[in-house]
Image 1 (tube, rainbow, N blue to C red):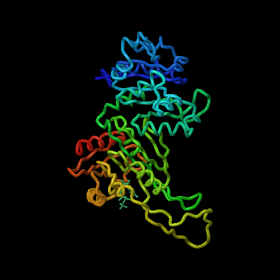
Image 2: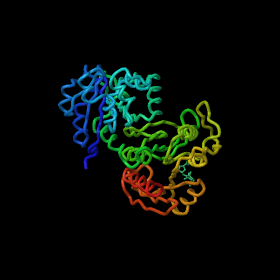
Image 3: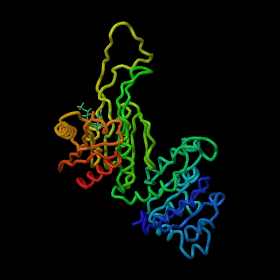
Image 4: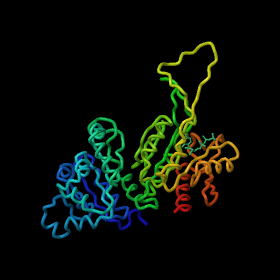
Length: 396
Ligand code: CTP
Protein backbone atom coordinates (compact mmCIF):
# COMPACT_ATOMS: atom_id res chain seq x y z
CA UNK A 1 0.00 0.00 0.00
CA UNK A 2 1.29 3.46 -0.86
CA UNK A 3 2.03 5.76 2.06
CA UNK A 4 -0.94 8.08 1.54
CA UNK A 5 -3.32 5.74 -0.28
CA UNK A 6 -6.60 7.50 -1.05
CA UNK A 7 -5.84 10.44 1.28
CA UNK A 8 -7.24 13.83 0.23
CA UNK A 9 -4.39 16.31 0.57
CA UNK A 10 -5.14 20.00 0.24
CA UNK A 11 -1.85 21.69 -0.60
CA UNK A 12 -1.69 25.41 0.17
CA UNK A 13 1.12 27.32 -1.50
CA UNK A 14 2.09 30.78 -0.26
CA UNK A 15 4.52 33.35 -1.64
CA UNK A 16 8.11 32.25 -1.23
CA UNK A 17 10.91 31.14 -3.48
CA UNK A 18 10.59 27.58 -2.12
CA UNK A 19 7.27 27.42 -4.02
CA UNK A 20 9.29 26.09 -6.95
CA UNK A 21 9.64 22.80 -5.03
CA UNK A 22 5.86 22.36 -5.04
CA UNK A 23 5.85 20.78 -8.49
CA UNK A 24 7.96 17.93 -7.07
CA UNK A 25 5.88 17.90 -3.91
CA UNK A 26 2.63 17.42 -5.85
CA UNK A 27 4.17 14.63 -7.92
CA UNK A 28 5.52 12.93 -4.79
CA UNK A 29 2.17 13.19 -3.00
CA UNK A 30 0.42 11.58 -5.95
CA UNK A 31 3.06 8.87 -6.20
CA UNK A 32 2.40 8.16 -2.52
CA UNK A 33 -1.25 7.54 -3.42
CA UNK A 34 -2.80 10.87 -2.41
CA UNK A 35 -5.41 12.87 -4.27
CA UNK A 36 -4.19 16.45 -4.35
CA UNK A 37 -5.99 19.77 -4.71
CA UNK A 38 -3.91 22.93 -4.77
CA UNK A 39 -4.81 26.34 -3.38
CA UNK A 40 -2.43 29.23 -4.04
CA UNK A 41 -2.22 32.69 -2.57
CA UNK A 42 -1.87 35.64 -4.90
CA UNK A 43 1.81 35.94 -3.93
CA UNK A 44 2.42 32.25 -4.69
CA UNK A 45 1.35 32.83 -8.29
CA UNK A 46 4.32 35.17 -8.67
CA UNK A 47 6.64 32.20 -8.09
CA UNK A 48 4.93 29.27 -9.87
CA UNK A 49 2.07 29.12 -12.30
CA UNK A 50 -1.28 27.51 -11.56
CA UNK A 51 -1.04 25.79 -14.96
CA UNK A 52 1.92 23.68 -13.83
CA UNK A 53 0.20 22.64 -10.61
CA UNK A 54 -3.08 21.97 -12.32
CA UNK A 55 -1.36 19.64 -14.77
CA UNK A 56 0.55 17.82 -12.04
CA UNK A 57 -2.31 17.55 -9.55
CA UNK A 58 -4.92 16.66 -12.17
CA UNK A 59 -7.35 19.07 -10.49
CA UNK A 60 -8.21 22.72 -11.01
CA UNK A 61 -6.09 25.07 -8.90
CA UNK A 62 -7.92 27.65 -6.81
CA UNK A 63 -6.69 30.95 -5.52
CA UNK A 64 -9.66 33.26 -5.04
CA UNK A 65 -12.62 33.21 -2.71
CA UNK A 66 -14.57 35.12 -5.34
CA UNK A 67 -14.29 32.71 -8.27
CA UNK A 68 -17.97 32.04 -8.95
CA UNK A 69 -17.50 29.10 -11.31
CA UNK A 70 -15.12 27.35 -8.90
CA UNK A 71 -17.40 28.02 -5.93
CA UNK A 72 -20.33 26.55 -7.85
CA UNK A 73 -18.32 23.39 -8.59
CA UNK A 74 -17.03 22.97 -5.01
CA UNK A 75 -17.57 25.70 -2.44
CA UNK A 76 -14.71 26.64 -0.14
CA UNK A 77 -16.57 25.01 2.75
CA UNK A 78 -16.89 21.78 0.76
CA UNK A 79 -13.21 22.00 -0.08
CA UNK A 80 -12.39 22.43 3.62
CA UNK A 81 -14.46 19.31 4.37
CA UNK A 82 -12.97 17.38 1.45
CA UNK A 83 -9.46 17.57 2.94
CA UNK A 84 -8.20 14.71 5.13
CA UNK A 85 -5.12 16.78 5.71
CA UNK A 86 -3.99 20.31 4.83
CA UNK A 87 -0.34 21.02 4.06
CA UNK A 88 0.83 24.59 3.59
CA UNK A 89 4.23 24.52 1.89
CA UNK A 90 5.96 26.85 1.77
CA UNK A 91 4.36 28.73 4.64
CA UNK A 92 5.70 32.29 4.45
CA UNK A 93 6.18 34.56 7.47
CA UNK A 94 3.10 36.47 6.32
CA UNK A 95 1.01 33.31 6.09
CA UNK A 96 2.07 32.26 9.60
CA UNK A 97 1.09 35.69 10.92
CA UNK A 98 -2.30 35.57 9.21
CA UNK A 99 -3.05 32.01 10.39
CA UNK A 100 -1.92 32.87 13.92
CA UNK A 101 -4.23 35.89 13.88
CA UNK A 102 -7.15 33.71 12.76
CA UNK A 103 -7.62 35.84 9.66
CA UNK A 104 -9.79 34.79 6.73
CA UNK A 105 -8.74 37.37 4.18
CA UNK A 106 -8.06 35.01 1.29
CA UNK A 107 -9.09 31.52 0.22
CA UNK A 108 -6.22 29.65 1.90
CA UNK A 109 -6.52 31.35 5.31
CA UNK A 110 -10.31 30.84 5.17
CA UNK A 111 -9.79 27.13 4.49
CA UNK A 112 -7.36 26.81 7.40
CA UNK A 113 -10.06 28.24 9.68
CA UNK A 114 -12.91 26.25 8.15
CA UNK A 115 -11.29 22.81 8.09
CA UNK A 116 -11.44 20.21 10.81
CA UNK A 117 -8.56 18.31 9.21
CA UNK A 118 -5.09 18.58 10.74
CA UNK A 119 -3.10 21.47 9.27
CA UNK A 120 0.61 20.96 8.63
CA UNK A 121 2.87 23.93 7.97
CA UNK A 122 6.29 23.91 6.31
CA UNK A 123 7.74 27.34 7.05
CA UNK A 124 10.28 28.79 4.62
CA UNK A 125 11.84 32.22 4.77
CA UNK A 126 15.04 34.17 5.27
CA UNK A 127 16.79 33.10 8.48
CA UNK A 128 16.43 36.51 10.16
CA UNK A 129 12.70 36.59 9.39
CA UNK A 130 12.39 33.09 10.90
CA UNK A 131 14.34 34.07 14.04
CA UNK A 132 12.31 37.27 14.47
CA UNK A 133 10.38 37.30 17.75
CA UNK A 134 7.14 38.05 15.90
CA UNK A 135 7.47 34.94 13.73
CA UNK A 136 8.49 32.79 16.69
CA UNK A 137 5.49 34.00 18.70
CA UNK A 138 3.19 33.18 15.77
CA UNK A 139 4.68 29.69 15.46
CA UNK A 140 4.30 29.09 19.20
CA UNK A 141 0.65 30.19 19.05
CA UNK A 142 -0.05 27.97 16.05
CA UNK A 143 1.66 25.00 17.65
CA UNK A 144 -0.36 25.45 20.83
CA UNK A 145 -3.50 25.34 18.68
CA UNK A 146 -2.50 21.99 17.19
CA UNK A 147 -0.96 23.08 13.88
CA UNK A 148 1.90 20.74 12.99
CA UNK A 149 5.08 22.60 12.14
CA UNK A 150 7.65 20.81 9.97
CA UNK A 151 11.06 22.42 9.81
CA UNK A 152 12.41 24.72 8.64
CA UNK A 153 15.70 23.04 7.90
CA UNK A 154 18.97 24.88 7.88
CA UNK A 155 21.49 25.38 5.12
CA UNK A 156 22.12 27.61 2.16
CA UNK A 157 19.25 29.95 1.39
CA UNK A 158 18.06 31.42 -1.89
CA UNK A 159 18.92 34.90 -0.55
CA UNK A 160 22.58 33.84 -0.31
CA UNK A 161 22.63 33.56 3.47
CA UNK A 162 23.12 30.38 5.47
CA UNK A 163 20.92 29.45 8.41
CA UNK A 164 17.57 28.15 9.54
CA UNK A 165 14.69 28.88 7.18
CA UNK A 166 14.82 26.40 4.29
CA UNK A 167 11.65 24.52 3.48
CA UNK A 168 12.01 20.80 4.17
CA UNK A 169 12.49 18.69 1.06
CA UNK A 170 9.34 17.25 -0.58
CA UNK A 171 10.22 13.67 0.50
CA UNK A 172 10.58 14.78 4.13
CA UNK A 173 7.19 16.49 4.02
CA UNK A 174 5.56 13.43 2.46
CA UNK A 175 7.12 11.22 5.16
CA UNK A 176 5.83 13.60 7.82
CA UNK A 177 2.29 13.45 6.40
CA UNK A 178 2.46 9.68 6.06
CA UNK A 179 3.75 9.36 9.61
CA UNK A 180 0.82 11.41 10.75
CA UNK A 181 -1.40 8.44 9.95
CA UNK A 182 0.75 6.14 12.15
CA UNK A 183 -0.05 4.41 15.44
CA UNK A 184 1.23 7.31 17.59
CA UNK A 185 -1.01 9.82 15.83
CA UNK A 186 -2.50 12.33 18.24
CA UNK A 187 0.03 11.58 21.00
CA UNK A 188 2.61 14.09 22.13
CA UNK A 189 5.98 12.72 23.26
CA UNK A 190 8.53 14.55 25.36
CA UNK A 191 12.02 13.07 25.12
CA UNK A 192 15.29 14.04 26.81
CA UNK A 193 18.56 13.25 25.04
CA UNK A 194 22.31 13.68 25.30
CA UNK A 195 24.56 14.51 28.21
CA UNK A 196 24.44 17.51 30.51
CA UNK A 197 27.46 19.71 31.14
CA UNK A 198 27.97 21.03 34.66
CA UNK A 199 30.27 24.01 34.68
CA UNK A 200 33.20 24.35 37.07
CA UNK A 201 34.47 27.63 35.71
CA UNK A 202 34.28 29.46 32.35
CA UNK A 203 36.45 26.86 30.62
CA UNK A 204 35.81 23.54 32.39
CA UNK A 205 32.83 21.33 32.98
CA UNK A 206 31.82 17.86 34.16
CA UNK A 207 30.21 15.91 31.33
CA UNK A 208 29.78 12.38 30.11
CA UNK A 209 30.14 10.37 26.93
CA UNK A 210 26.48 10.28 25.86
CA UNK A 211 26.13 11.15 22.15
CA UNK A 212 22.38 11.76 22.25
CA UNK A 213 21.87 9.30 19.38
CA UNK A 214 19.36 7.09 21.21
CA UNK A 215 17.12 10.01 22.19
CA UNK A 216 17.31 11.52 18.68
CA UNK A 217 16.54 8.11 17.14
CA UNK A 218 13.50 7.88 19.41
CA UNK A 219 12.36 11.35 18.33
CA UNK A 220 12.75 10.44 14.65
CA UNK A 221 10.98 7.08 15.08
CA UNK A 222 8.10 8.65 17.03
CA UNK A 223 7.62 11.30 14.30
CA UNK A 224 7.55 8.57 11.66
CA UNK A 225 4.84 6.80 13.69
CA UNK A 226 2.70 9.92 13.71
CA UNK A 227 3.50 11.44 17.13
CA UNK A 228 4.11 15.08 17.90
CA UNK A 229 7.56 15.28 19.47
CA UNK A 230 9.34 17.74 21.72
CA UNK A 231 13.01 16.95 22.29
CA UNK A 232 14.97 18.50 25.14
CA UNK A 233 18.60 18.07 24.16
CA UNK A 234 21.81 18.52 26.08
CA UNK A 235 24.97 19.55 24.20
CA UNK A 236 25.14 17.20 21.20
CA UNK A 237 26.36 17.36 17.61
CA UNK A 238 23.21 16.04 15.93
CA UNK A 239 20.73 17.36 13.38
CA UNK A 240 17.17 17.84 14.59
CA UNK A 241 14.92 15.20 12.98
CA UNK A 242 12.38 16.75 10.60
CA UNK A 243 9.29 18.06 12.32
CA UNK A 244 10.64 17.69 15.84
CA UNK A 245 10.50 20.67 18.18
CA UNK A 246 13.88 20.93 19.88
CA UNK A 247 14.81 22.79 23.05
CA UNK A 248 18.55 23.03 23.72
CA UNK A 249 19.86 23.03 27.27
CA UNK A 250 23.26 22.62 28.88
CA UNK A 251 22.88 21.67 32.52
CA UNK A 252 20.74 19.24 34.52
CA UNK A 253 18.95 22.16 36.18
CA UNK A 254 18.11 23.70 32.79
CA UNK A 255 16.91 20.32 31.49
CA UNK A 256 14.72 19.90 34.57
CA UNK A 257 13.20 23.37 34.10
CA UNK A 258 12.58 22.85 30.37
CA UNK A 259 10.94 19.45 30.92
CA UNK A 260 8.66 20.62 33.74
CA UNK A 261 7.56 23.62 31.65
CA UNK A 262 6.57 21.32 28.76
CA UNK A 263 4.62 18.65 30.67
CA UNK A 264 1.07 19.86 29.96
CA UNK A 265 -0.60 17.71 27.31
CA UNK A 266 2.24 15.17 27.14
CA UNK A 267 1.16 11.56 26.60
CA UNK A 268 4.54 9.86 26.99
CA UNK A 269 7.79 11.00 28.59
CA UNK A 270 11.00 9.16 27.72
CA UNK A 271 14.15 10.05 29.65
CA UNK A 272 16.98 9.03 27.33
CA UNK A 273 19.39 11.72 28.54
CA UNK A 274 22.45 10.88 30.58
CA UNK A 275 21.83 13.55 33.18
CA UNK A 276 24.67 14.39 35.54
CA UNK A 277 23.75 13.20 39.04
CA UNK A 278 26.09 15.77 40.64
CA UNK A 279 27.24 19.27 39.86
CA UNK A 280 29.94 21.47 41.37
CA UNK A 281 28.63 23.19 44.49
CA UNK A 282 30.03 26.48 43.31
CA UNK A 283 30.81 27.68 39.82
CA UNK A 284 33.86 29.89 39.75
CA UNK A 285 33.34 33.18 37.89
CA UNK A 286 36.98 33.22 36.80
CA UNK A 287 39.20 30.40 35.56
CA UNK A 288 40.39 28.27 38.47
CA UNK A 289 44.21 28.53 38.69
CA UNK A 290 46.33 25.54 39.57
CA UNK A 291 48.59 25.34 42.59
CA UNK A 292 51.12 22.74 43.72
CA UNK A 293 48.65 21.18 46.13
CA UNK A 294 46.18 18.44 45.16
CA UNK A 295 42.61 19.56 44.67
CA UNK A 296 39.16 18.13 45.27
CA UNK A 297 35.71 19.10 44.10
CA UNK A 298 32.66 19.72 46.26
CA UNK A 299 29.63 18.31 44.46
CA UNK A 300 25.91 18.52 45.10
CA UNK A 301 23.02 16.46 43.72
CA UNK A 302 21.09 17.64 40.69
CA UNK A 303 17.31 17.24 40.44
CA UNK A 304 16.18 13.80 39.24
CA UNK A 305 14.11 14.80 36.22
CA UNK A 306 12.58 11.38 35.62
CA UNK A 307 11.47 11.01 39.25
CA UNK A 308 10.07 14.57 39.22
CA UNK A 309 8.01 13.88 36.08
CA UNK A 310 6.68 10.66 37.56
CA UNK A 311 5.62 12.43 40.77
CA UNK A 312 4.14 15.44 39.01
CA UNK A 313 0.39 16.18 39.07
CA UNK A 314 0.82 16.50 35.29
CA UNK A 315 2.27 12.97 35.09
CA UNK A 316 2.02 11.68 31.50
CA UNK A 317 0.25 8.37 30.85
CA UNK A 318 3.56 6.62 30.16
CA UNK A 319 6.77 7.53 31.98
CA UNK A 320 9.78 5.67 30.64
CA UNK A 321 13.38 5.64 31.84
CA UNK A 322 16.69 4.30 30.64
CA UNK A 323 19.23 2.42 32.71
CA UNK A 324 22.84 2.02 31.69
CA UNK A 325 24.47 -0.69 33.77
CA UNK A 326 27.76 -2.55 33.76
CA UNK A 327 26.43 -5.46 35.85
CA UNK A 328 23.27 -6.92 37.42
CA UNK A 329 21.24 -5.38 34.59
CA UNK A 330 17.84 -6.91 35.44
CA UNK A 331 18.04 -6.25 39.15
CA UNK A 332 19.28 -2.63 38.94
CA UNK A 333 16.91 -1.71 36.13
CA UNK A 334 13.88 -3.07 37.96
CA UNK A 335 14.93 -1.28 41.14
CA UNK A 336 15.05 2.02 39.20
CA UNK A 337 11.67 1.29 37.72
CA UNK A 338 10.17 0.73 41.19
CA UNK A 339 11.96 3.62 42.88
CA UNK A 340 10.91 6.16 40.27
CA UNK A 341 7.45 4.62 39.73
CA UNK A 342 7.99 4.08 35.99
CA UNK A 343 5.76 2.36 33.47
CA UNK A 344 8.77 0.98 31.63
CA UNK A 345 12.54 1.06 31.66
CA UNK A 346 14.93 0.31 28.81
CA UNK A 347 18.17 -1.12 30.13
CA UNK A 348 21.42 -1.60 28.30
CA UNK A 349 24.80 -2.92 29.22
CA UNK A 350 27.51 -0.29 28.89
CA UNK A 351 31.21 -0.81 28.58
CA UNK A 352 30.94 -3.35 25.73
CA UNK A 353 32.34 -2.36 22.34
CA UNK A 354 29.78 -1.93 19.51
CA UNK A 355 26.77 -0.82 21.53
CA UNK A 356 25.57 1.80 23.97
CA UNK A 357 27.30 5.15 24.53
CA UNK A 358 28.71 6.85 21.41
CA UNK A 359 27.76 3.86 19.23
CA UNK A 360 25.11 3.85 16.49
CA UNK A 361 23.88 0.48 17.73
CA UNK A 362 22.19 -0.67 20.88
CA UNK A 363 20.73 -3.81 22.46
CA UNK A 364 18.01 -3.17 25.03
CA UNK A 365 16.12 -5.12 27.62
CA UNK A 366 12.79 -3.46 28.25
CA UNK A 367 10.90 -4.01 31.50
CA UNK A 368 7.26 -3.05 31.60
CA UNK A 369 4.79 -3.73 34.38
CA UNK A 370 3.74 -6.69 32.23
CA UNK A 371 7.10 -8.36 31.67
CA UNK A 372 10.54 -8.43 30.13
CA UNK A 373 11.18 -7.85 26.41
CA UNK A 374 14.55 -8.23 24.67
CA UNK A 375 15.49 -6.00 21.74
CA UNK A 376 18.55 -7.62 20.13
CA UNK A 377 21.51 -5.56 18.91
CA UNK A 378 20.27 -3.26 16.12
CA UNK A 379 20.74 0.30 14.93
CA UNK A 380 19.49 2.83 17.45
CA UNK A 381 16.69 3.77 15.03
CA UNK A 382 15.57 0.12 14.83
CA UNK A 383 15.83 -0.23 18.61
CA UNK A 384 13.78 2.97 18.94
CA UNK A 385 11.06 1.59 16.65
CA UNK A 386 10.94 -1.63 18.66
CA UNK A 387 10.79 0.23 21.98
CA UNK A 388 7.90 2.43 20.81
CA UNK A 389 6.03 -0.65 19.56
CA UNK A 390 6.47 -2.35 22.94
CA UNK A 391 5.24 0.74 24.79
CA UNK A 392 2.02 0.95 22.76
CA UNK A 393 1.42 -2.78 22.92
CA UNK A 394 1.92 -2.98 26.69
CA UNK A 395 0.20 0.29 27.55
CA UNK A 396 -2.38 0.92 24.83
N1 CTP B 1 17.63 10.74 35.04
C1 CTP B 1 17.00 11.95 35.11
N2 CTP B 1 17.52 12.94 35.90
C2 CTP B 1 18.64 12.76 36.62
C3 CTP B 1 19.29 11.51 36.56
C4 CTP B 1 18.76 10.53 35.75
O1 CTP B 1 15.98 12.13 34.46
N3 CTP B 1 19.11 13.74 37.37
C5 CTP B 1 17.05 9.65 34.23
C6 CTP B 1 17.87 9.25 33.04
O2 CTP B 1 17.51 10.00 31.89
C7 CTP B 1 17.52 7.78 32.89
C8 CTP B 1 17.35 7.33 34.32
O3 CTP B 1 16.99 8.49 35.04
O4 CTP B 1 16.30 7.62 32.22
C9 CTP B 1 18.59 6.74 34.88
O5 CTP B 1 18.40 6.50 36.22
P1 CTP B 1 19.55 6.77 37.30
O6 CTP B 1 19.09 6.12 38.55
O7 CTP B 1 19.89 8.17 37.39
O8 CTP B 1 20.73 6.03 36.62
P2 CTP B 1 22.21 6.25 37.03
O9 CTP B 1 22.57 7.67 37.11
O10 CTP B 1 22.98 5.40 36.11
O11 CTP B 1 22.09 5.69 38.51
P3 CTP B 1 23.12 4.86 39.35
O12 CTP B 1 24.28 5.74 39.45
O13 CTP B 1 22.37 4.67 40.60
O14 CTP B 1 23.30 3.61 38.55
